[in-house]
Length: 246
Image 1 (cartoon, rainbow, N blue to C red):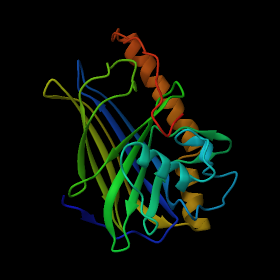
Image 2: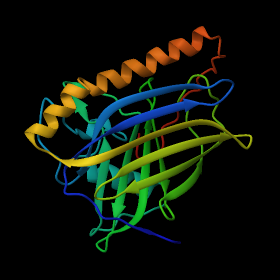
Image 3: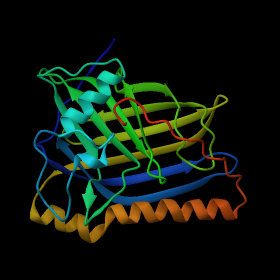
């Protein structure tokens, strides 16, 4: 397997960037939002409450004592392993002013030589369900089968191709859903990691106030718009949590 060497920024970091969603079938419809996320070492999260917090209850099953324990339990449950000398980094929106909604949280396992050994894509839908994909990127890319009900307008089929860039001056995560050999949906976040300072945080808050609330609201508004366009709703199956989420 070909691994990817990464050069991480100084952590924790504020990552200011842009989210883009694009539906390609049966018609094109997009969403674009300036926002920010946080890149942290799960063993040393920043303490900036009420602005942001990273409680373990917002990830995986919410039952572990720490984020590292939660990630480790999930990875082991999927047949992987987390070495004691690996750093675990997380890119997430966090819980802000009492509200948490991360459509996608990304965890990276980084070896002592700076090699990206594995990643976890933790997907959250608007119904409160969560699902994770353990991937082992080769040159930052990985492919997995879709196995989770995310949008009410897509069935549970197809494959995701993920691209993960973790560098000292650029963070980029993209997900492409392919169905029947065609691109059905793309989502991405591209941002620049910045030191956590009063000035950088203030600019992010002014540019995107209540970011997690905005994300949650915009997704629901776009869902209503698609429903008004008479896009068929796919019935939601009963969710069976994975090992590590129960």
